[in-house]
Amino acid sequence: MNLRKSVKKACFNADIKQKDLAEKLGMKPQQLNCTIARNSTSFAMLTRLASAFDMKVSEFIALGE
Image (tube, rainbow, N blue to C red; front, top):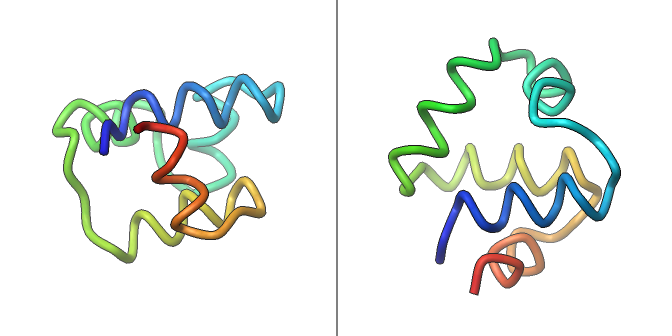
């Protein structure tokens, strides 16, 4: 899974910016960028990201494949 690709595609499809996604997740944009840059994250964060886009975790992960 490519976390960065998943986030970029999901943001593009939802027509939102990563800054807005960070706000929706209750994070600072820098925190979200660090999470994405690591390209690995916890299942809890994957769940939060997927929920932010009203997707299942598997659908969110598939965007980065």
